[in-house]
Length: 348
Image (cartoon, rainbow, N blue to C red; front, side, top):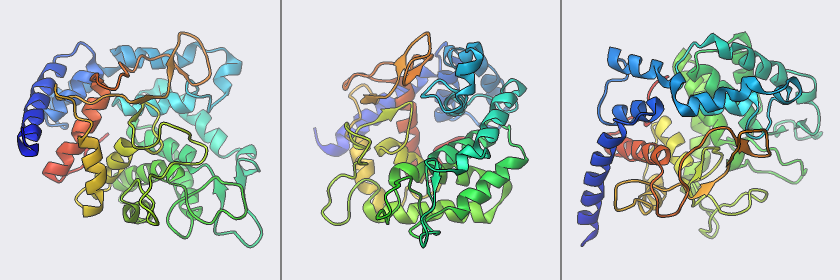
């Protein structure tokens, strides 16, 4: 079977799989599948389906953040069960906007973002003569902006976080938390998440500085074809990220891999750029005969208590040749966006 025939077969299998997932008993899976099947996200049916997502097993598990003792809950960034990552994951599963139960968590995150500790080494470092290269883990701010917008829980400090993040953008268009004075280039690991957050805010508020800052990240990553060094064509693997590298699909925690890089380019409307071709081909190479995609690099441990890099939620199977529904829906949204020329992520 030739490549075109194989692609057609997989697309046909994917359409059937989407129909099956649209009947899922999990409202989060059913909602995202229905959007891919053609449901208008602004329709009354879509709104009704999204309003049921809080009853999803995924959402119910993530909301166990409120069961944590005060000491644990106070650890805002705890990987991956603290308030910050709980809100990130809720936004990922299209949790409906405006749930005021989440407001205290968002306020806690903003208190953390604007605390004195957050602006001191080792969190934020500025070397004399390098004031244009603030060393800071901008993914923290980027996610906080993104979920505040998607969850409909912005506050006045959200704009402050946006403007501060733009002010910290490095000359080459990204951000970096590398504290070595000799570090002179942005980190992809720390730049894609801020781009997504700034784009979401810019779109929601027609705020040109945020949109322009996000597009600068595209200008940073596209010359590298999203994943590869310009110098020798080797895969870009962050020094501290370890293996598996970004050629594998990481989920649910996303920083820098083939799927997430393409999701951000889809949000920014840049999937049609020919420099996305190799990353798209890599993603398509992971297409399973049954029409789905695998979770190749799981980065959480499902647990009913607080553990390092744990999650209360079960994010699905993680075998190389087994379909993961959530990864499948994310990957198919990217491929649909490539084909139809629109953004992959439904509006919050």
